[in-house]
Length: 302
Image (tube, rainbow, N blue to C red):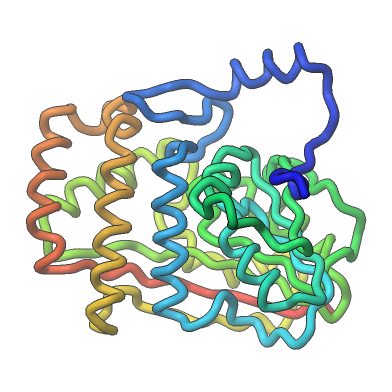
């Protein structure tokens, strides 16, 4: 079976695809970034590795990949699926379900396949599409039993959240669940690390993004007309174990290493000041830790 059988994209002329790619992407400090999106992180292989690490962190902290009371869903959608690791595990857990993930870029998915090695592959009940979550979803109404989006606050402008959650609701079947997962504000005793965090928050504010989307998720679900909205708050790094501490520290330090050329380019900090603060944060954060509350908000579509 061909390795990329699970990848599908809308057909378009080759010359148009090449032209679109040249407009969408740029290289900044050795990192591949989106030109046409407020997304704050790079979109490259190294960032894909960090996203997989972040997935394992959440799995350790929560114990599973969702908080909605799922039974036996037959169709599952992941919005902004990144490397596809969440989709892969859901497809393995719910073998009877069709699991679909879409993302604006296929690079993290291809890198994830490469990390799996020659014997690795995605389950046959998983399908990937290349699509933009900030545009109407490429699905008919009421197609999915469970519609999920995790940590999308890094690219969804505040003004676009109602539209995106409305699309998630539209494609969810009656009796199905919609779930949003995102972080609240990050804190740490490390002054050097918080110096970097505050710079990233200024950049996000300048791009029209939430600096902590987690506290707004339940409100967006209600605004979309959903009822029986529930929230679960998981304080990552809040003294829950050595493994969680190590994973959170590794994730945060990698995140701010990847953000360096983007934050510097935005004029928030000089290159020298950023490098100095990052070096100090790498020394301090493993000792003093950080806390990053994660909010799971979900509701049934009646």
